[in-house]
Amino acid sequence: MLYRLPRALALSALALAASTFADPIDDLIQREIETKKIPGAAVLILKDDQVVKRAAYGLADVEQQVKMTPEAVFESGSIGKTFTATVIMQLVEEGKLSLDDPIAKHLGDKVPEKWRANTVRHLLAHQSGIPEYALVPSLGLVETWTLDDWWKKMAELPMDFAVGARFAYSNSNYLLLGLIAQAVAGEDINALRTKRILEKLELKSSLVEDARRIVPNRIPGYLLLPNGIARGMAIPHVYGDGSLLNTLEDLATFEKAFREGRLVKPETRDLMQTAQRTTNGRKTGYGLGWMVREVNGVPTVSHGGNTGAFSNSVFTVPSEKLTIVLTMNVHNQSGDGLAQRIAEHYAPALAPIAYKESPDPDPARTEKLLKSVKALTAGELASADLDPDYLERLQTARGRMGLGALARFRSVESMAFLNQEKADPDTLLRYRTKVDGKSVLLTLVVTSEGRLFQVGFRDEG
Image (cartoon, rainbow, N blue to C red; front, side, top):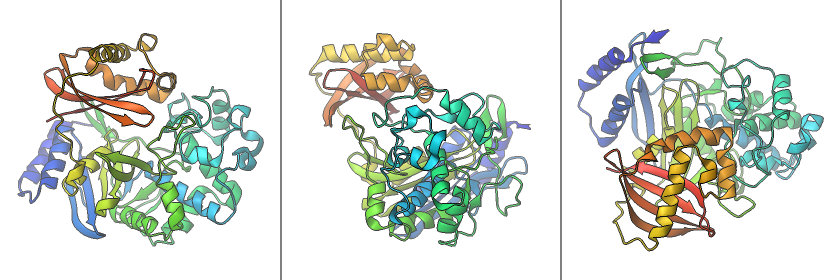
């Protein structure tokens, strides 16, 4: 069923306009749902483990014109990977498996020869090189297939990269971790997550996804289409890479229990929330089941979760004792991105820095890098002076998806140098560019050989 979005959003906006927003968080989220045509959103914000904001915006059900509430039960998507990682580390603590166990030790002859250098640690850290199954025709998240189908099709695919050589987020890793947990503990990953986490913490509104079950307060999610919205697509598979329904409160309770060492030991928690490194020494920005990043030098720990109908985040700033849990009932947004912008109001050090333009110490380098970026926008990978690891990453299915975001840089009106800093073992360069009349901060990571390793950007102002 297709719903015309303009009318639905207009009704939502009318309902919201009737109230006066009390703080900038309300304004931020309201602008987000209006600008990006998101039906509804809900947020829970805790400081020092005390609730400072619990609010909902827009519509939970567009068809029935039902308002969003903070009690909504929603698909949390890849946040379920953190639950799976927690179960795996519990089994490690119990001596039932080791992070350095080869995966074939627990999965046997089903493991293709080319995967056999992989360990449990490689899967947890997304450093396996095993392709992303969700982008393989016939194995998509919303397609119907069996595990036998999965093993047969995946065994035919080449590796994305050598084991441990780099980081590449892949649902395949956590599907396999779920199977390893089952082989070790004798129960499937959903039963293990239920007993060891949901029931242990009395998360009464959280459960394993089941489209047939009647769940109080469960809300629908949506797909944005050019001419309106449609009901989101159900994901029929219930493996270790997602598959949970949660509420904001339940996810906040999980994060607190994890942080306090009530699910795994404190030393295990610290390991899971430490960024791993590739074989060439680069930090990956991912630990063992958690995203671990720095924003302006301030550490953050989070995990986003997207399904065919929802976008979510559990986002923490440990130094500020700040936790943000967020859901949006639409499929294609960045939960972590919005959560970070919310966090900036409570932790100003996270806010974007207004960099000043400076004399370019190496204009020839800048010209060369801009040429490489423009080659990427045209899909001309061979024409860009790329680091081999970056080239390999761009040639994967997920990498090709990311290239589309660079299309805006096909026509750069101006490019001004801002600064540079070491990003061990590389150099990070920042430029202010003008693209389609807008000011865009362009961040380039360059290797010691002068090759492009990473491209990032964000709009300024």
